[in-house]
Amino acid sequence: MNKKQTCFDCIFQQENVQLVHGDCNAAMKALVKQGVKVDAIITDPPYNISKANNFSTMKTAKRQGVDFGEWDKGFDLISWLDIADKLLKDGGNIVIFNSFLNIGNIAKALESRGYAIKDLIRWIKPNPMPRNMSSRFVSDYELAIWCVKGKKKWTFNNTSGSYLRPEIRCPSPNGKERLGHPTQKPVCLMETLVKILTNPEDVVLDPFMGSGSTGVACIRQNRHFIGIELDEKYYNMSYKRIFNDN
Image (tube, rainbow, N blue to C red; front, side, top):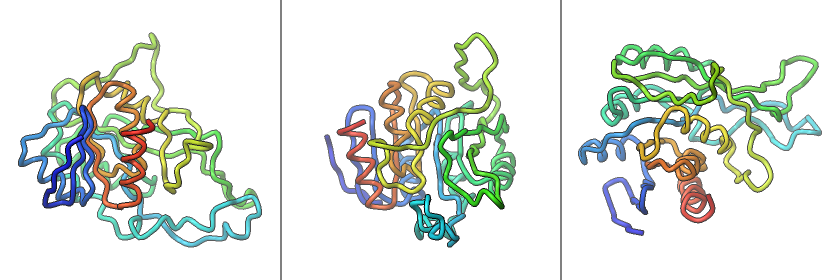
């Protein structure tokens, strides 16, 4: 494992994995200068949905409100796309998870940058977070927008012999997989996306690495992975998981 200091904190690199602890914009600008190109971007940036609520009054809920932290407040949902665009190859896939409240704005931003919107992918959760059943539908899904850069042919691996629905059914992380990141995505979800939208030896970028689920999925599916994470706690979580546990 090689470690070297850079202007955006540090890089750890081992075989087909590169992890960056630092600001994603600075890190991506450095990658652009190095001439790096990636085949796909699969990421789960902040949703800007943190707020207090009445979960503390619900005896079955273990959470005290949807307040994920300062990182989920006032986040610029759009500007990072300009730098990411310089890294993504023509014909490259980009998948961005976000709140249904933000998906439309993200779609418009990508379309204005020359991306073709392909679909909304739905993550269906059989174990959704509890809600007040007398006043709300339970939130048993999350959305991701899937787009393709440019006009070149994109990767779409359908070996099922039938139509693929744009939905993936995976439980929210639990048991040993649950690591303490409040918006952790399950590896089975990210692994499905990696298998369908990339090929072996492709390079996948996740500028908002979080708990490292995308990185684990890439390792398991023989893809190269570049992950960036600003928060030191979550960076260390990803580092341990990707290099030691996966």
